[in-house]
Image (cartoon, rainbow, N blue to C red; front, side):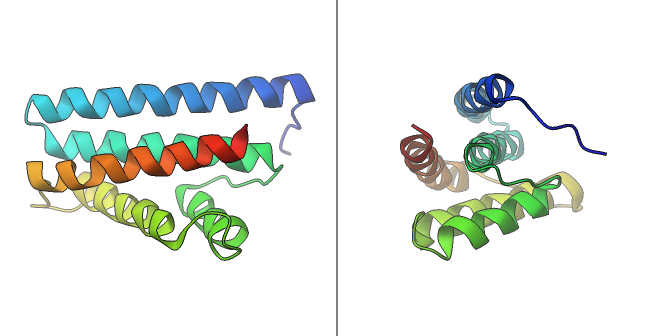
Length: 133
């Protein structure tokens, strides 16, 4: 049985998830500076993931898996035009790149990929923060 959060706990968890999103963006920059591009993509993905978790909590939408979070984002926000299709694609790309770099043999991310994804992840998180206000 899943525990239900009281309103104060829900608000605190939303704030915490957004703080974790900011921290993960910073971690991605550090990983990239050191040449750890797979780790940087991982942190970019998690930054966006934490932000989406905050958004879902804000709207009382439950998802317990990464795929579930992705599905709920698409169903409740991208398909309704609340979040742009481009931002939805950013999250999907990060989801796929993180998964392949963590679990597939010989999957490597490079500086160019991280440099391309970083501003997209930042814009994605910025839009979610606007929606969570």
